[in-house]
Length: 89
Image (cartoon, rainbow, N blue to C red):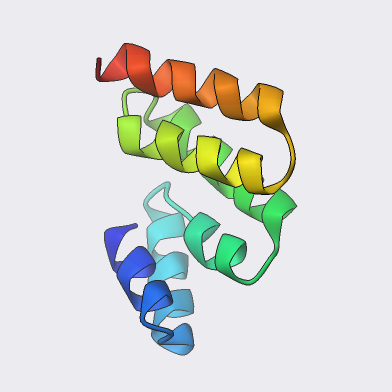
């Protein structure tokens, strides 16, 4: 997931997608890449799947919160932010 984020931020798209596919195989996903390209619904689904597999990931919950905000879903964003805070106060 971290590799996906870094490659996406520096604009290295093909390696970012390859890293996202590898992350998906381990329960992660392409949420950061999808968000960057505007696929917000797909990004939310990907990160939700990630936090279902790792509900103690504060980074996952924070990422979901940010994606929900970008997708104009403030109630889901607040819920995810609250879960992140409970996991890592």
